[in-house]
Length: 273
Figure (spheres, one colour):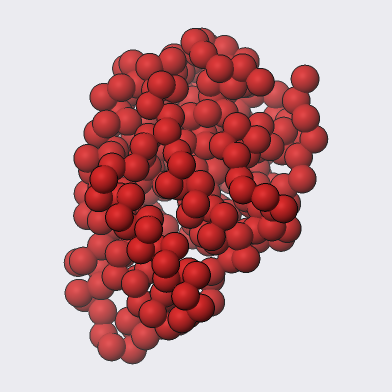
Protein backbone atom coordinates (compact mmCIF):
# COMPACT_ATOMS: atom_id res chain seq x y z
CA UNK A 1 0.00 0.00 0.00
CA UNK A 2 1.36 3.42 -0.97
CA UNK A 3 1.89 5.82 1.94
CA UNK A 4 0.72 9.44 2.13
CA UNK A 5 2.97 12.11 0.70
CA UNK A 6 3.96 15.30 2.57
CA UNK A 7 5.33 16.85 -0.63
CA UNK A 8 3.89 20.01 -2.15
CA UNK A 9 3.30 19.53 -5.84
CA UNK A 10 2.48 21.10 -9.20
CA UNK A 11 -0.21 19.31 -11.22
CA UNK A 12 -0.99 20.18 -14.83
CA UNK A 13 -2.51 18.75 -17.98
CA UNK A 14 -4.42 15.64 -18.96
CA UNK A 15 -3.41 12.36 -20.56
CA UNK A 16 -0.97 9.58 -19.63
CA UNK A 17 0.70 10.07 -16.27
CA UNK A 18 4.11 11.71 -15.99
CA UNK A 19 5.84 12.10 -12.62
CA UNK A 20 8.73 14.56 -12.41
CA UNK A 21 11.78 14.24 -10.14
CA UNK A 22 13.90 17.38 -9.86
CA UNK A 23 17.58 17.91 -9.13
CA UNK A 24 19.42 18.65 -5.89
CA UNK A 25 18.98 22.31 -4.74
CA UNK A 26 16.34 22.67 -7.45
CA UNK A 27 12.56 22.52 -7.56
CA UNK A 28 9.92 21.51 -10.08
CA UNK A 29 9.41 25.09 -11.20
CA UNK A 30 13.15 25.77 -11.21
CA UNK A 31 14.21 22.64 -13.13
CA UNK A 32 11.18 21.97 -15.33
CA UNK A 33 9.46 25.38 -15.49
CA UNK A 34 10.42 26.22 -19.11
CA UNK A 35 9.07 22.87 -20.40
CA UNK A 36 6.12 22.28 -18.03
CA UNK A 37 3.50 23.64 -20.42
CA UNK A 38 4.92 21.54 -23.25
CA UNK A 39 4.86 18.38 -21.15
CA UNK A 40 1.33 19.11 -19.94
CA UNK A 41 0.00 19.39 -23.50
CA UNK A 42 -0.05 15.59 -23.74
CA UNK A 43 0.34 14.34 -20.18
CA UNK A 44 -1.09 14.57 -16.70
CA UNK A 45 2.04 15.98 -15.07
CA UNK A 46 2.67 15.67 -11.34
CA UNK A 47 5.73 17.47 -9.99
CA UNK A 48 6.52 17.12 -6.28
CA UNK A 49 9.10 19.35 -4.57
CA UNK A 50 11.58 17.59 -2.30
CA UNK A 51 11.76 18.52 1.40
CA UNK A 52 13.27 21.99 1.64
CA UNK A 53 12.37 22.98 -1.95
CA UNK A 54 9.41 24.92 -3.30
CA UNK A 55 6.53 24.86 -0.80
CA UNK A 56 7.66 21.63 0.90
CA UNK A 57 9.05 22.19 4.42
CA UNK A 58 12.60 21.12 5.16
CA UNK A 59 13.01 17.60 6.59
CA UNK A 60 13.80 17.20 10.29
CA UNK A 61 16.71 14.83 9.53
CA UNK A 62 18.90 13.57 6.67
CA UNK A 63 17.10 12.68 3.46
CA UNK A 64 16.71 8.99 2.65
CA UNK A 65 16.53 7.82 -0.97
CA UNK A 66 13.96 5.07 -0.37
CA UNK A 67 11.69 7.41 1.57
CA UNK A 68 11.98 10.14 -1.05
CA UNK A 69 11.20 7.69 -3.87
CA UNK A 70 8.16 6.40 -1.97
CA UNK A 71 6.94 9.95 -1.32
CA UNK A 72 7.17 10.85 -5.00
CA UNK A 73 5.16 7.78 -5.98
CA UNK A 74 2.60 8.49 -3.24
CA UNK A 75 2.19 12.03 -4.60
CA UNK A 76 1.39 10.72 -8.09
CA UNK A 77 -1.12 8.21 -6.70
CA UNK A 78 -2.79 10.92 -4.61
CA UNK A 79 -3.25 12.93 -7.80
CA UNK A 80 -5.08 10.04 -9.48
CA UNK A 81 -2.27 8.35 -11.39
CA UNK A 82 -2.28 4.56 -11.13
CA UNK A 83 0.62 4.15 -13.55
CA UNK A 84 3.03 6.73 -14.93
CA UNK A 85 6.36 7.42 -16.58
CA UNK A 86 8.99 9.21 -14.51
CA UNK A 87 11.29 11.93 -15.83
CA UNK A 88 14.26 12.38 -13.51
CA UNK A 89 16.79 15.20 -13.83
CA UNK A 90 20.20 15.06 -12.08
CA UNK A 91 19.51 13.77 -8.51
CA UNK A 92 16.03 13.02 -9.83
CA UNK A 93 17.53 10.21 -11.91
CA UNK A 94 18.50 8.03 -8.92
CA UNK A 95 15.19 8.95 -7.28
CA UNK A 96 13.34 7.76 -10.41
CA UNK A 97 15.39 4.56 -10.60
CA UNK A 98 14.71 3.71 -6.97
CA UNK A 99 11.01 4.47 -7.44
CA UNK A 100 10.93 2.07 -10.39
CA UNK A 101 12.54 -0.77 -8.45
CA UNK A 102 10.40 -0.23 -5.34
CA UNK A 103 7.10 0.31 -7.19
CA UNK A 104 7.38 -1.74 -10.40
CA UNK A 105 3.62 -2.10 -10.75
CA UNK A 106 3.28 1.65 -11.27
CA UNK A 107 6.22 2.81 -13.41
CA UNK A 108 5.82 2.43 -17.18
CA UNK A 109 8.92 4.24 -18.53
CA UNK A 110 11.91 6.32 -17.44
CA UNK A 111 13.58 9.41 -18.89
CA UNK A 112 16.84 10.21 -17.10
CA UNK A 113 18.63 13.48 -17.90
CA UNK A 114 22.07 14.72 -16.74
CA UNK A 115 22.10 11.97 -14.14
CA UNK A 116 24.35 9.50 -12.32
CA UNK A 117 24.22 6.20 -10.45
CA UNK A 118 27.05 6.85 -7.99
CA UNK A 119 29.43 9.80 -7.57
CA UNK A 120 32.86 9.20 -9.11
CA UNK A 121 36.01 10.38 -7.31
CA UNK A 122 35.90 13.69 -9.19
CA UNK A 123 32.21 14.16 -8.45
CA UNK A 124 32.85 13.54 -4.74
CA UNK A 125 35.36 16.41 -4.77
CA UNK A 126 32.74 18.56 -6.46
CA UNK A 127 30.09 17.63 -3.87
CA UNK A 128 32.52 18.46 -1.04
CA UNK A 129 33.20 21.87 -2.61
CA UNK A 130 29.48 22.47 -3.12
CA UNK A 131 28.75 21.73 0.54
CA UNK A 132 31.65 23.91 1.67
CA UNK A 133 30.22 26.83 -0.30
CA UNK A 134 26.68 26.27 0.96
CA UNK A 135 27.85 26.12 4.58
CA UNK A 136 30.11 29.16 4.26
CA UNK A 137 27.27 31.68 4.21
CA UNK A 138 29.01 33.52 1.35
CA UNK A 139 26.06 33.70 -1.04
CA UNK A 140 27.97 35.58 -3.74
CA UNK A 141 30.82 33.04 -3.88
CA UNK A 142 28.33 30.16 -3.83
CA UNK A 143 26.33 31.66 -6.70
CA UNK A 144 29.43 32.27 -8.80
CA UNK A 145 30.67 28.70 -8.20
CA UNK A 146 27.25 27.26 -9.07
CA UNK A 147 27.07 29.24 -12.32
CA UNK A 148 30.63 28.24 -13.27
CA UNK A 149 30.15 24.51 -12.62
CA UNK A 150 26.50 24.17 -13.55
CA UNK A 151 26.30 25.93 -16.90
CA UNK A 152 28.05 24.68 -20.02
CA UNK A 153 31.08 26.70 -21.13
CA UNK A 154 29.59 27.71 -24.52
CA UNK A 155 26.44 28.98 -22.78
CA UNK A 156 28.44 31.20 -20.40
CA UNK A 157 31.01 32.26 -23.00
CA UNK A 158 28.31 33.84 -25.18
CA UNK A 159 27.02 36.06 -22.37
CA UNK A 160 27.50 39.76 -21.96
CA UNK A 161 28.66 40.94 -18.51
CA UNK A 162 25.08 42.04 -17.80
CA UNK A 163 23.66 38.64 -18.72
CA UNK A 164 26.24 36.88 -16.58
CA UNK A 165 25.39 39.11 -13.62
CA UNK A 166 21.73 38.15 -14.05
CA UNK A 167 22.59 34.45 -14.06
CA UNK A 168 24.68 34.82 -10.89
CA UNK A 169 21.92 36.76 -9.16
CA UNK A 170 19.43 34.06 -10.18
CA UNK A 171 21.69 31.37 -8.73
CA UNK A 172 21.97 33.33 -5.52
CA UNK A 173 18.23 33.81 -5.16
CA UNK A 174 17.28 30.22 -5.97
CA UNK A 175 19.11 28.32 -3.20
CA UNK A 176 16.34 26.53 -1.24
CA UNK A 177 16.29 25.96 2.55
CA UNK A 178 16.94 22.24 2.03
CA UNK A 179 19.97 22.70 -0.26
CA UNK A 180 22.51 21.19 2.13
CA UNK A 181 20.27 18.18 2.88
CA UNK A 182 19.84 17.51 -0.84
CA UNK A 183 23.52 17.85 -1.73
CA UNK A 184 24.43 15.56 1.17
CA UNK A 185 22.05 13.00 -0.37
CA UNK A 186 23.85 13.39 -3.72
CA UNK A 187 27.07 12.32 -1.98
CA UNK A 188 25.39 9.19 -0.55
CA UNK A 189 23.71 7.99 -3.76
CA UNK A 190 24.44 4.49 -4.99
CA UNK A 191 21.84 2.95 -7.31
CA UNK A 192 24.24 0.83 -9.34
CA UNK A 193 22.47 -2.36 -8.28
CA UNK A 194 19.12 -0.91 -9.39
CA UNK A 195 20.25 -0.38 -12.97
CA UNK A 196 20.24 -4.01 -14.06
CA UNK A 197 16.80 -4.55 -12.55
CA UNK A 198 15.02 -2.03 -14.76
CA UNK A 199 12.77 -3.64 -17.36
CA UNK A 200 10.73 -0.66 -18.55
CA UNK A 201 11.61 1.45 -21.62
CA UNK A 202 14.30 3.93 -20.61
CA UNK A 203 15.87 6.94 -22.29
CA UNK A 204 19.10 8.39 -20.92
CA UNK A 205 19.71 11.96 -22.11
CA UNK A 206 23.38 12.92 -21.90
CA UNK A 207 24.12 16.63 -21.50
CA UNK A 208 27.37 16.66 -23.48
CA UNK A 209 28.95 19.78 -21.92
CA UNK A 210 28.09 18.79 -18.35
CA UNK A 211 30.87 19.38 -15.80
CA UNK A 212 28.75 18.32 -12.82
CA UNK A 213 27.30 14.91 -13.73
CA UNK A 214 29.55 14.26 -16.70
CA UNK A 215 28.86 12.13 -19.81
CA UNK A 216 30.92 9.42 -18.06
CA UNK A 217 28.09 9.09 -15.55
CA UNK A 218 25.36 9.18 -18.20
CA UNK A 219 26.98 6.39 -20.19
CA UNK A 220 27.47 4.31 -17.04
CA UNK A 221 23.72 4.52 -16.38
CA UNK A 222 22.69 3.76 -19.96
CA UNK A 223 25.08 0.85 -20.39
CA UNK A 224 23.81 -0.93 -17.27
CA UNK A 225 20.06 -0.66 -17.99
CA UNK A 226 18.89 -3.44 -20.32
CA UNK A 227 17.75 -2.00 -23.65
CA UNK A 228 18.16 1.65 -22.60
CA UNK A 229 18.22 4.24 -25.35
CA UNK A 230 20.87 6.98 -25.29
CA UNK A 231 20.53 10.50 -26.69
CA UNK A 232 22.86 13.48 -26.59
CA UNK A 233 21.86 17.06 -25.87
CA UNK A 234 24.24 19.98 -26.40
CA UNK A 235 24.03 21.52 -22.95
CA UNK A 236 25.77 21.83 -19.64
CA UNK A 237 24.03 20.69 -16.47
CA UNK A 238 21.18 23.18 -16.98
CA UNK A 239 19.18 21.98 -20.02
CA UNK A 240 16.09 23.91 -18.86
CA UNK A 241 18.09 27.13 -19.34
CA UNK A 242 20.51 26.16 -22.11
CA UNK A 243 18.41 24.02 -24.47
CA UNK A 244 14.79 23.79 -23.24
CA UNK A 245 13.16 23.22 -26.64
CA UNK A 246 15.58 20.46 -27.63
CA UNK A 247 15.19 18.85 -24.20
CA UNK A 248 11.40 18.93 -24.44
CA UNK A 249 11.63 17.46 -27.94
CA UNK A 250 13.68 14.47 -26.79
CA UNK A 251 11.41 13.75 -23.82
CA UNK A 252 8.22 14.21 -25.83
CA UNK A 253 9.29 12.04 -28.75
CA UNK A 254 10.29 9.19 -26.44
CA UNK A 255 7.10 9.33 -24.37
CA UNK A 256 4.94 9.57 -27.50
CA UNK A 257 6.62 6.42 -28.85
CA UNK A 258 5.92 4.61 -25.57
CA UNK A 259 2.26 5.69 -25.67
CA UNK A 260 1.93 4.12 -29.12
CA UNK A 261 3.74 0.93 -28.07
CA UNK A 262 3.64 0.89 -24.27
CA UNK A 263 5.99 -1.13 -22.10
CA UNK A 264 4.52 -3.50 -19.55
CA UNK A 265 4.13 -1.96 -16.06
CA UNK A 266 5.60 -4.16 -13.37
CA UNK A 267 8.36 -5.59 -15.56
CA UNK A 268 11.09 -4.72 -13.08
CA UNK A 269 13.15 -7.14 -11.01
CA UNK A 270 14.14 -5.77 -7.65
CA UNK A 271 13.28 -3.70 -4.63
CA UNK A 272 9.74 -3.34 -3.35
CA UNK A 273 8.41 -1.06 -0.67
